[in-house]
Image (cartoon, rainbow, N blue to C red):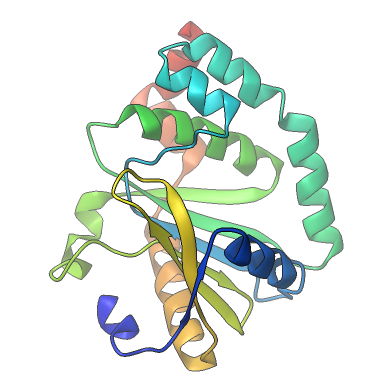
Length: 202
């Protein structure tokens, strides 16, 4: 996987420049869709009230705040479908789960219920691709845009590197699709790991 990106030229976009660029291209995705590979297990989301609550150990409030997003997320995915595309993501999970992952997986379950299709895959299944480092966090938007997401040492997103070489984008998307095909439905994962019951207890 990392070999695909070695030597590829991309534009480094940080902060607002990345956000504006992403927004510009997101709604032009087309039938190839949005595909995302998520690998890292710890992030900071200081602007997210639900994450802040979870980071303070207040899981009941955290999950309640996530549930309050149901209506707005439903409208978001309705808008995506109206623009003629879908979103898919594969989430690598590494036991034991970090608190961040327990929070994010609950958000991803909600997204999946509303149309943001998500599967999970155990980190042991991707070790064969990580001889030279962990897999990058990637987003492909259609056939023409891909971002390699950038984070600081604390897990705070800084921006991304945008690639526009179609052959590279298609190859990376096919890799993400391969992992997605090997992944487990997120609701089945929750059931198997007892996370739904855990959510209800909080």
